[in-house]
Image 1 (tube, rainbow, N blue to C red):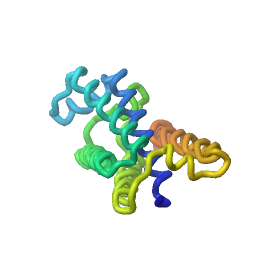
Image 2 (image 1 turned 90 degrees about the vertical axis):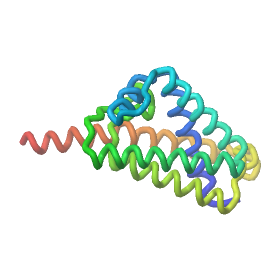
Image 3 (image 1 turned 120 degrees about the vertical axis):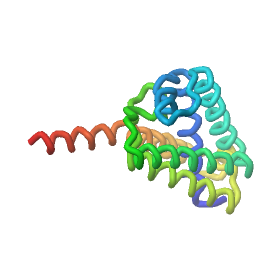
Image 4 (image 1 turned 60 degrees about the vertical axis):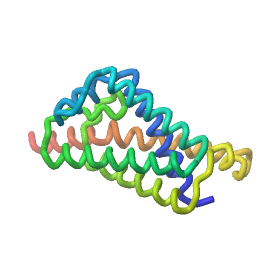
Amino acid sequence: MTAWIAPFEMAAVLLALGGALKAVYPGDTARALATFGLPNRPGLVRAGGIGEAFLGAWALLSGSLAAVLLVAASYTLFAGFVWSARRRKLPIASCGCFGKADTPPSSIHLALNVGAAAVAVAVAIAGGAGVVDVLRAQPLAGVPYSFLLVLGVWLAFVALTELPRALLAAAESRAGS
């Protein structure tokens, strides 16, 4: 089992969570796609979100090479979207990564997406494992591992949703002083 499995599992959970939230709240993602001139019907966004949720769950549960590579491809596409939005200075208030949470494309998004794609590639090379097998290999019935996995996902979620807003507010405050 590779040392990259825990960060990969966090990335898979984030993918599943983001997909589920997009399926429920497709509006911000639809608006972000419209800014790029891409197909943006809410039904299409919902279908994509459901696909992301299933992919994240499949990757987490199976650790199969196909699932891991699809996670890498997903995060690579997300990184390209964020990079392009930032480079073109598109007026996107939220990329819709997590449905209703206001998540403007930021350097933090770009770094997390690139990191998640790289971790997925590392797991694809070293070999993945499903979360059940990973938990079986952990001490104390996997409870500490599970706690750290949930904590890592929560910290990444906060870094993607709250940190960009806090940094923007701080910058605006300094500019207004």
